[in-house]
Length: 57
Image 1 (tube, rainbow, N blue to C red):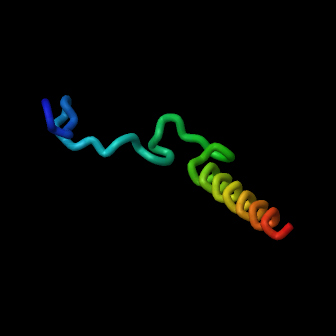
Image 2 (image 1 turned 30 degrees about the vertical axis):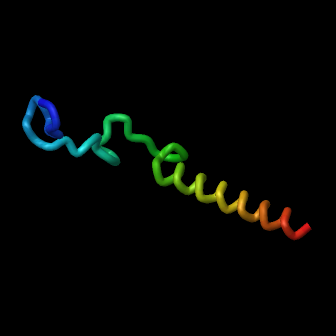
């Protein structure tokens, strides 16, 4: 099956792993994708504020 992006067993396109509660390894709390994204955003903002503060000195 060269060049084809189809499930070799079932013939349909593979949409990837399920999201949310359909996922077998479903997690709640601080390890959800939303929580991780929020922490990354907060880290970016705090670094930006620190850079601005350093430039003002």
